[in-house]
Amino acid sequence: MCDNGRMPEPIGILLTNLGTPDAPTTSAVRRYLREFLSDRRVVDLPRPLWLPILHLFILPFRPRRSAHAYSSIWSDNGSPLLHIARLQAAALEKLLRGEIATPLHATVGMGYGNPSMRCGLEELRERGCGRVLVLPLYPQYSSATTGSAFDAVTKVLTSWRALPEVRWINGYHRHPGYIGALANSVREFWQEHGEPSRLLLSFHGLPKRYDAAGDPYRAQCEQTARGLASALELPEERWALTFQSRFGREEWLQPYTDMTLRAWGGDGLERVHVLCPGFSADCLETLEEIDIQNRHFFLESGGAEFGYIPALNERPDHVRALADLVKLHLGGWVETR
Image (cartoon, rainbow, N blue to C red; front, side):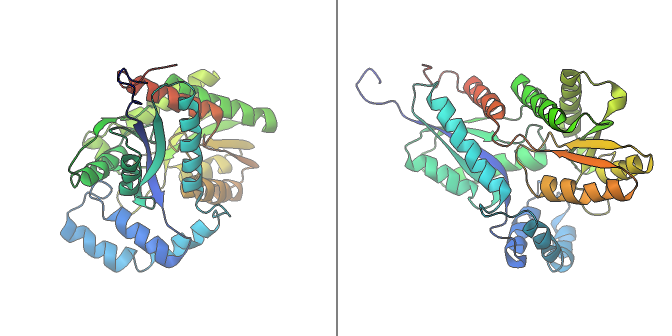
């Protein structure tokens, strides 16, 4: 309670992630891809070059294939990414409310699709949140992800007459709670399935020219991977870092996940486990691309056993890490219990 007898103004926590189609259908995926691939942060090619490619060659054909992939992971709860994001927001809010005296609300706003960034911000405004902390759930910063989320939040706020105070978390690739939660998830998987011949740490890819232009993403992925390997006390020969989800014909960050798994299968590795540390929640790129497509690549090439280690999702140690990160950035805004 404030000195004047009124409750303090609540704080809003906006959890953001990439987004998802509304349904695993061709039309819904086309709407989603049109929005996603029109973002200048995501594809920074000159518009006169890119837009004809997008509208004449990608949007007429790719949505059908992508819809089939989405249908393979869709559940009764809908999109896994959105369902997990809502669970994360609810768990984070519950944990923080037990530790912070100042009222707060946590909600979700997606970069593309629904619920939109505007929807999330307006929900916090309706709840009276005059201060907002934006937490993009991308541990490693990239202009194409965290930078794009910043643009989306700013675009919404340009139309508001009264602006909230806003703070921003750029990333948490070396946060000890995050590294610890990753290590715990690996150890628990190994206790159930045994240790592998090799652990593959697969991060989302990025065009190589982004790295050359100064994007810190690759360096932060490497720091995360080395921090996790150190926590697990893994020697260099028992793990590797790769990049997945490349798109188009230009060169992306290497080594590539699919080619590495094919090579490992050809080398006769008996057991490989794959973890995707850059994904805070399971989604198309982990459940379909890694656990279905790349599983097939490894086994077809001669590998014997493939294991996918789930993303951190709403694990209590992951939520604990996010809560600690939030509390660090709320300094001066809140009273702790």
